[in-house]
Length: 81
Image: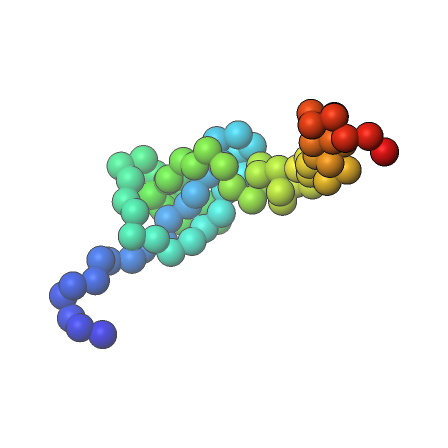
């Protein structure tokens, strides 16, 4: 790696604003806000969506049914069964 061109990485805590879940990760982001996490103080980055609140990961995602789309198409263009 070339020296002096890469941003400094540090440990930061990301907090999901919707659920309050926190996780520790390496990041180049920095924050003036700090939080105590597992006995240490880290910068705190607030995020709106994480795997703790995203519908795909929580199992609450709704899937569009292909059957419904086909029926809607047939109804719109007057095709009968």
